[in-house]
Length: 320
Image 1 (cartoon, rainbow, N blue to C red):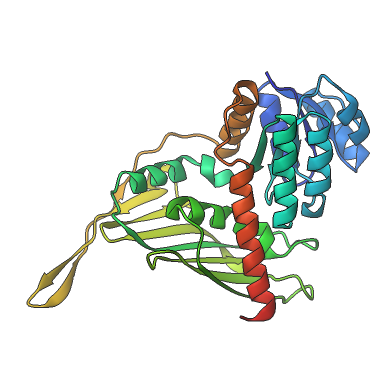
Image 2 (image 1 turned 180 degrees about the horizontal axis):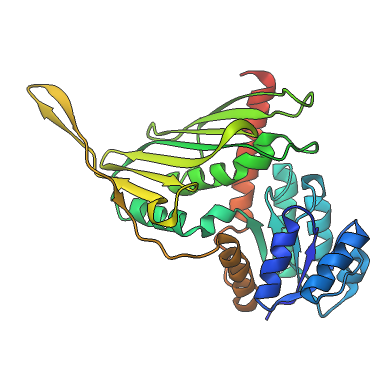
C-alpha cells in the first residue's frame, strides 16, 4: 500500500491527515508550523518531518499536498522528481503551463498525479453522472451551480480560484467538452484585487449554457447544482439530508394547438449510499498508486479546470 505524507496540516490538510490515517496509509505529516505538525502527528501516530526529510525518505512513496495554491507547482514538481506519487488539492496549479509541467514530470517519472476535485467522489454526483450518461435527462441544455456561504475569506487567492474549481470540474464532466465562450464578472469588497464574488457563464458546442456563481459573502450556505435537459431535470443539493440530496424531475413539454405546454412532475429522490466523499477520494488515490490506474480526476482533468479558470480570470479582469 502507498505510504503517504500529508504536506500542509491547516484548515483542510487536517482532514486529509485524518482520512489517510483512517485508511492505514499515513506515514508522516509536514507543515510550515512545526508545532501544528507535531500536534497533529502525535494525534494520529505519525512523525512530523521537514519537507526535505519527506523528499529524502524512500519509504514515503506518495504525498498529499494541501499547501497554499502558489506553492502547488513547486512542491508538486519537487515531489514528482523525487519519485513520489502526488495528490494535489485544487487547483492543480495557477497556470495552464504549470499544470502541463506537472503532467509532463509525472509521465517522465511514471508517477500518479491526482487533483482533489472532491465532488467527483460524492455519491450524489456519481449518481448524477450516471443519470446523464444513461440519457435520463436527454440532451443537456442548461447547468447552474451555486456555491455560496459566509465562509473563510482568503488572502492568497480569490473566490474564483478557491471555490469555483469544484463547480467548473462538475460542469466539464457533465458537458463532456470545453466551452467555446467564457465570460466572468466579479467584485472585491474586502481586500482590493481579491474577488469575494464571481459569476462565470459558459457556452458549449451545440448551444448548451452553464453558469457558476461563487461567493464567501452570502448570508446562507448554498451548494446547489441544477441540470436541465430536454428529457428531464435534476438537482444536487448538498445542504439537504442524504435521502433528498439528488432529485430527478421528469418534467416534459408537449405541443398543443401549436403552443408548448409544460407538464410538471413530482421529484423522484435517488437513493444514495452514505459515504464520506473525502474518504472515497483518498481511497481512490491509494488504489491508483497501488494499481497504476489513472485517477478519475487526473492531471489532464486538473489542467482542463485550470485552463478554464484562467479564461474566466482573464474575462473578469478585462470586462470582456
